[in-house]
Length: 229
Image (cartoon, rainbow, N blue to C red):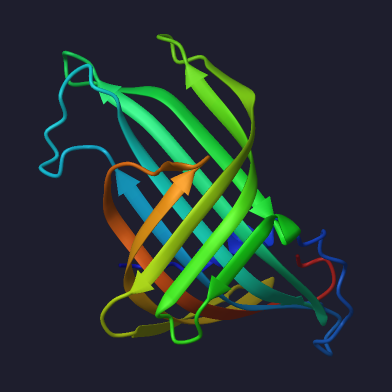
């Protein structure tokens, strides 16, 4: 299964403060910003929709996605560390004309002491137990959405790695008159099986994606002169 290291960046924004103004480290009146991160985690996705993809009109199907991460982030010399869990449960159906209709979506985030997380260094197993603040959104026939507090939920998931560890890496480089940026990332992941529960009830459906991963990235952003960024 695929694993995108940028997911760690999104999770990092939950704990990172607004970036301070960096000092001139370029020697040319500009500024540079340094950001790096490393961490372990796991993903899993389930769906109650038919394996052949043939949806039945009027039947409600539910997709559930869980992502966890235990990471350390370093921004301009300051280190932040935390644990995260994200859960998204989306219910939908099709009408008689074959149009997709959203029924509801429940989303939850948890971090810090609300998350008990373990990822084996060899990416052979992972587990999480978390207390999550949930919100549920629905839409009427005109597409007008309403979101409400769905209370506090519990999420428990375990992963078992399968197959070989897959490694990949990449470099991204952008140069313009005003700035330059270089990003490097690498990741290792192992496909997995997974089972889980939400509020004590088993997450339903067939598992369509699961992996256990270790990912890291480093980013350097340089402004070429005062006022260029």
